[in-house]
View 1 (spheres, rainbow, N blue to C red):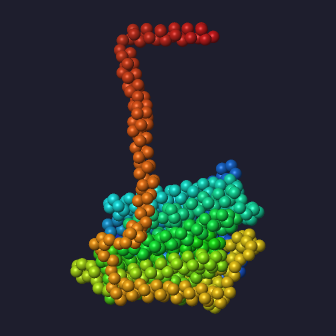
View 2 (cartoon, rainbow, N blue to C red):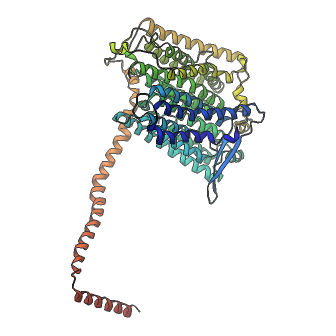
View 3 (tube, rainbow, N blue to C red):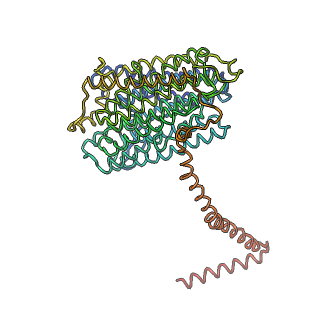
Amino acid sequence: MEQLAWLISLLPLAGFLLTTFLGKGVSKNAVGAVATLMVFAPFLITLGIFIPFAASDTHEPIRIILLEWMHIGSLSVNYGIQLDQLSLMMMLVITGVGSLIHLYSIGYMHDDERFHTFFSYLNLFVFFMLILVMGSNYLMLFIGWEGVGLCSYLLIGFWHKNPDYAKAANKAFIMNRIGDLGLLLGIFLLYLRFSTLEYNRIALEAMAIDMNDPLIRNATLLLFIGAIGKSAQLPLFTWLPDAMAGPTPVSALIHAATMVTAGIYLIIRSNVLFTLAPFTQEIIMVIGLLTALFAATIGLKQNDIKKVLAYSTVSQLGYMFFALGLGAYTAAYFHLFTHAFFKALLFLGSGSVIHAMGGEQDIRKMGGLKKALPITHFTFLIGTVAIAGLPPLAGFFSKDQILASAFAHNPILWVLGVGGALLTAFYMFRLYYLTFFGSFRGTHEQEHHLHESPPTMTIPLIVLAVCSVVAGFVNVPEVLGGNHWLDRFFADLLAGSTFLLEDQAHGHLSHTTEYILMAISTTLVLLVIFYARLRYFKNGHVPSADGEKLPAFQQLIADKYRVDELYDAIVSKPLLAASGLIHRILELNFFDRLVNGAGQIVVLGSRTFRFLQTGNVGFYVFAMTLGILALLAANLFLN
């Protein structure tokens, strides 16, 4: 199967070309089927490579050089792919979850007039995302990085006739450019130090560098800025909630399972460099933890079903960065892996609810949907339990590993991490009870048309629900009878970081301590769920949809801490004012006059010299004679 590896990224590109140029001439079902197949086939190829790779004892990376991309001076960049533990598992997530979302989109987008365009954009996104994770060097990563940013812009603003959606797309694109500049500068510094951009060569040469090397510290900080933008961390997180303007399958694919995890991929891929920069890791840990808590508190007071899930995504990404800052690279990826399933499930479940409600997204106008949407309800419940971190679902195992790493680092960090988990459990069960229980609060017309989604939408929900149950078993800890399979599988990938830290003391938790920590966190989560049930189900509390005045701090949370207003006041308005001032003073009075003056001089000169064109032959002979005399005089005096 290794010989077919080059097809993995090219098939989605072929799907993009086919749906773009031939999509209008065939049925929507045919377009959807082709686009889905062009993602599912790479999943099968990836699976065929992954199984023997995982079964081998050496886990030696597979490197395939397809062609030499460029050779300029000492810079030599190959168009090559690197298949190892990290890239293969990322490819499985991208193509596996991606193919399910493509299938779901056939039903969800069936009535859209730009159906084939939507699928062409989805296929193009998968192509660039695969380039990002399959590439063997930082330049290929950057090409994929920019490509997924472009596709995100196209898909967020897919319904561009709505000005607010177009603004959301612009916001995502512009805020990501800030991070992308940091990534590019970081890549420049790496080339300056190592004279190569190949992952394997940089990791090998970095082993000889001392800890806290200034250039490596600066390079990793710049790479982290890129990760902050793409993975929506403080302070560049506000674009992701607004990105919910795109169709729900876009939110599930791009803003839950794939693109937003690119920052985590980047840091794990560069783990040796980040291990050499403890200062950068401390920054990552702090920003990740702050983001996890900050976004989780905002989620408590959101009433748009997709906005709740969006802030949940920002919070869960913060958890992953928290783990990365602790040096728990495997734990970070483990949570990325499980999160891809249950968050995609939750987004697609919300899409099924929105589909049944005729486009309504306000949970205050829902309620009582359990009977009308039995499959959606049951799968959404599984996703909610998984993200809350209850055993034995996937989220329990990945969150527990992050919390265990936090406790080993510092018990205070464990307390803060558990606090974030409790907030997550509360706002997710608040969402669950307000949506599926109680009396229906929508219109009579909406109630009359309530129905379960078609099989193209419910089948992906069922598959993702199963994955949300079983995905955690890939890394069951020893304390629960497991063998930490994912830790052992990633051991060779992280060998460089392990070697660099082998002389440092590491806290190792006893089984008793792990049992106690699991029991405490699980008990607290259950208590929070019980409180949410009591408040929103038993007592039937529903937030007012009529602009109810909340206490000051609660209103601040409901207003998302007014971060957008803050950015508008300290960034957007000063820039607009400065640009207006420059326009009035410099552009109108200097540049415009300079350009217009040059044009007027040309026009005036043309008008003057045209009088020399009299049509009189005698005048032309006289002018020629004067010219000859002038040349002779110049030659005489200059020589």
